[in-house]
Image (tube, rainbow, N blue to C red; front, side):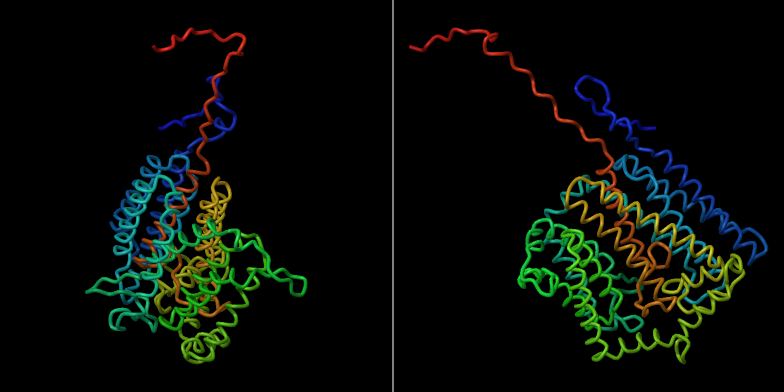
Length: 471
């Protein structure tokens, strides 16, 4: 087991701050073993409930799960030894619970399956990207040098599906995909990370523009009009995505990320008020112009009305689960449309009940909290903004998905991070966690103190040297 390299105070002894910091990779390993045991036990319970026996698939899935996260653990131990020891186990448990529910849907022979082998394959590619990010990006601050490049590529990826023919980009009424043959990818999942790099680097470089006060109106100091342009551009692009791709979820996620990062950079609540006002105004315009937005809002206002099969099935399933749930394998998640992706939360709530759903939400809350904690602790401004944006992305995405399936807000079509079936989302979120661990490693790694300057002898005690003048 690797030991930390403790910096010294110049006398050869370790400083108190260095002694308090330990890599704690053994804690991560034990938690990963515990997560694998939970996942294997849950899959076995599903098999016993549905097949009356434990199948060999339990061994295969458990071995694949432990192999993947064992590789991820070795990568963290090698390239980010001081990172938070809880983030990777939390991701493992959430992803494992998703595998349990997908296995349950496979046994119910839901259309589109089998899901579990494909999800494990996606997870393998995601872990490979996770390892690649940790190995190549040794210092998160280097990303700030490529801020505008990341922004340009991110916007291109975001707009690309809307420019392609519907035959290769449209699914469920939204143009989000690039489909070639039997494979498909959702570029917006990767675009959000690239745009986070751009906005973090831009806000660090131009922070003074956002903190400069303009005119005072009703006792509130508003920024100057020209300083509003980045926020206005973000608002226009978010509404443009709704128009071009009929994707309310990505629009809301993108705009929310920009708004929060501006607030983190400036600590001025006026930006939040302006941003929410702009988004509400744009939403009203979009509602009056586009029928698909009207349909989403009408479904939200009357979820039990005619034609709202998805929402109704999800709500009835959660109601059937009650407080304790029907038990793993005891529900009917196959009756919920899109139970493997958009509506996996109602399927999970039916079989684990309110208690199980709250436990999963607490796992997400812990992951988000640890990410925000790392962002607060890192020493550079870019890392604080980038890490805060990454953690908030998970939080906002979870809120939008959970709020949509419970009819708290209109449905948006986003994917539950790590839990739901889907390749693009899983791959992008593994990259997201890799960056969070890189920032966490930088925040927790002991700083090597500057070497003490050599003491110079007083002039009176200095040696006198005779220098011969050249002839």
